[in-house]
Image (cartoon, rainbow, N blue to C red; front, top):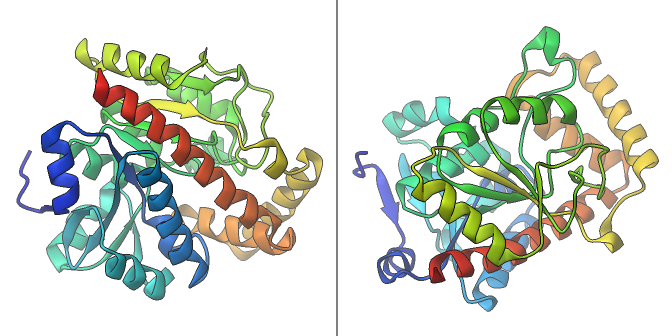
Length: 305
């Protein structure tokens, strides 16, 4: 793989060279996840959580046509201020943005690609994309799922976003051979809530056990990633009936406006935040913090083996 397009922050590169624990973080949450300055504060807090756990954070993005593994504070501030003016970048968008010298906010898929290029196998995010509701007619399936099938990066998340068809998302992951692990749970969390009604493949009790599974998978030469589902803490979990009702209303609004494709998720998350009077955004931030804490422990155990 040609590394000429990749800039690895010196601190991150040194940690990788020394075999220290490193953790990949995405940038879409900065540009598209919330308004300025909350987005910058959240991104810096996420990095601080990783550092306090003894892990080097590597926030991933595209700036001026360069793939970045690790951002400076000024680069995070730049991303936060530009916000939604920055293009969301998945796998298909990378060649265009790089060739044009543009900026890009990395989704789960593109964060995985850049993390693998930089040799960072552990990545913490909010929730993965998946099969959208009504995909049997729209064919709207997130590129995140195909990336999980082929890219050797473990993704710690709060399950699949609850705006999705979670059952079909799990079926797709099973077909692609992607293990779905539940951290101290047998049931897949549904982002804003701890339960979805769907089982994970395997419940795992410790970061050490998860790190051992990752080692076994990749040392056998099996391609692809692993989903590690970490339920949102109970105190930040939303009432399932209430959030499901809000999601249904948001989906109806989206359909009436004719919003499709990669604009769907940002619209839905923003509309859900509006309808929930900001409660969903607060839950979203807290579940990201929770995922970074677990991912940091997994990373430390992985790099110590």
